[in-house]
Amino acid sequence: MDFIKTAIDGVYIVEPKVFGDHRGFFMESWSQRAFEEAGLHYNFVQDNHSSSTVKGTLRGIHFQKGDKAQAKLVRCARGAVLDVAVDLRPNSATYKKWVAVELSEENKRQLLIPRGFGHGFVTLADDVEFLYKADNYYAPEADGGIRWNDPEIVVDWGIERPILSQKDETNPFLKDAVTGF
Image (tube, rainbow, N blue to C red; front, side, top):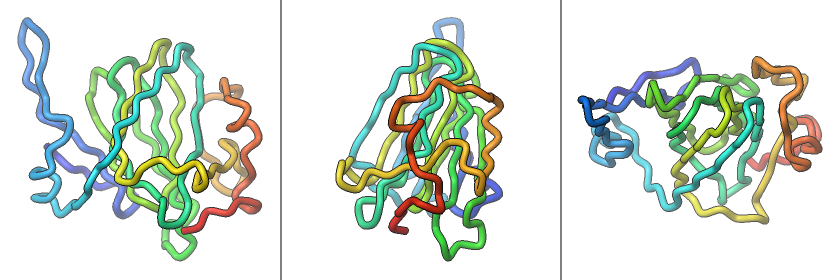
């Protein structure tokens, strides 16, 4: 695996080695040994899988607060997404900065997002399958989110009118949110 640093410390693009032939392909999507050799130590405890049927579906910006925070390793197994990680750590030099990476079934890239970040994605195709590992279990009482179009963050999602859940439509703006980082 190749680990590519992004503009925000701790956020990495992970490019697995892909072996393909006329039958298809094989790749390791997770290797604790490869991560540790790169100096990245994570103990992932939960795998999640989401499906979005329509292009333009936006999920996020989500996080878990306090000691229930989660680091994530995310990837798109079918279709394509624009994946976004937002630094929500108030004492960070990159507070309120974000990184966006296209993840797709073609490029097989993954994004490693440490604790203290908000996460979201917008689908760039119909019928998207999105998978991610988390290093902490989901805890409803620690669930948090900020508005996808927060004026303090100004993420360029590449879409003006995304398809949103009720929750994502009504998430607070960052100035009103309790992040717990």
